[in-house]
Image (spheres, rainbow, N blue to C red):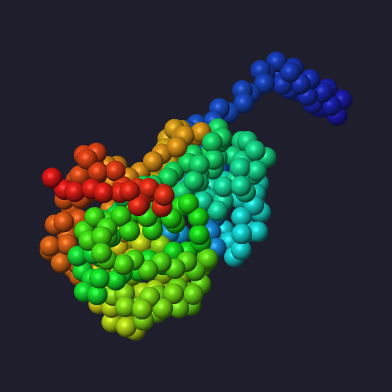
Amino acid sequence: MKRIISLLITVLMIGSLIVSCGQKPSEPQQPTGTPQVTGTPTPEKKMIVAMVTDTGGLGDKSFNDLAWKGITKFVEENGDEAESKVAQSKQPEDYQPNLTSMAEAGVDITFAVGYLFEKALGEVADANKDSKFAIIDTVVQKPNVASVTFKEHEGSFLVGVIAAKTTKTNKVGFVGGMTGDLIKKFETGFRAGVKAVNPEIQVLVNYTESFSDAAKGKEAALSQFNSGADVIYHASGGCGLGVIQAAQDKNLWAIGVDQDQSDLAPENVLCSMIKRVDTATYSIAKATLEGKFPGNSVTVLGLKEDGVGYSDNAGNTSAEAKELADKWAKAIVDGKVVVPEKEADLEGFSAKLE
C-alpha cells in the first residue's frame, strides 16, 4: 500500500513539472498613463545689462542716474528675460578693472557712462572681443562697441536764451565740471544762446575739475553770485548739487542739466537742459535683446532727434522766455541756425530769427 501511494506522489510531481515547463513566461506589465518627469526644469539664462559709472556715481541726480534710469526701465519691461548690475567707480583708475570684471562675468552688454572711459574701454574691448559694450559721450569705433553722442550745445543754447530773458543784472554764469571738449560744448552753446538774445550780457565761467565734489560746485556758484550773476547754468554732474544749493542760499536761479532737477529746489531751479541719456541706454539694451546690437556704430542725438531739449517741471520759466526758446529750437531743427560747439566759433557767431 505504501508503495502504491509513493508511486502516485511521484507521478503527480512529474506531471506538475511538465505543466510548469509548458507554460509561456508572463508578459511584462505595460505602463499606463503619461510618464511623470521628476526634477525642476532649468530656466534659460537671463540677459544681463551692466553699467559702470564715472566718478560721479549713482545719486548724482544727473548723468549717471539718468543712464541707470534707462537700464532700469528696460529691465522692468523685460523682467523675465533681463536683469541688471552696476559697478561704481570711485576714481578713474577703477574704470578698466570694473569693465574687465563685467566682461569676465559674462555680462551681455556693459555701458561705460562718460567720455572719460574712452581709453579704458578701447583696451578692454580689444581684450574681450566676444563681449559687447556701449559708451556714452564719446566714440570708440570697434565691432563690439556701440557709441552714442549728443549735441549738448543745441540744448544749452536754449537754456542760454532762457537765462538771457530772465536775468535782471545782465550777468549770468556757467559752472563746468572737468575741462575738456565735451563740457566746452555745453559752455559754448549756452554762451551762444545768451549772445543771440543780448550780446551785452556778461557770462562768468568757472570749472571745478570734478564731477562729484558738490562743495566745489557750491564754491564756484557762490563766487559768481557774489560777482553779480543771478542765473547760473551748470554742467558738472554731482558738483551741480552744490550749485543748486548756492542758488537756494542766495534765493537766485540755477539751471539744471541732463534731467529735470527742479525737484532739488523747486523755488530756485529756473529750468533744466535735458539730455536723454536714458533713451540711449534703453534703446541699445533693447536692440541687444532683439539680436540687433549696433556694434561699430555712432548715434548722434540732437534737437531734431529729440535727444536734447529743455524742461520746466516747476513752472519757473516765463511764458515769454519759453516762446522765444521754442522759436529758436524750431530754427535749429529746420537747419536755419547752426549752433557753435567750439569756443573758436563763438566769436563769429551771429544769428537772427526770421
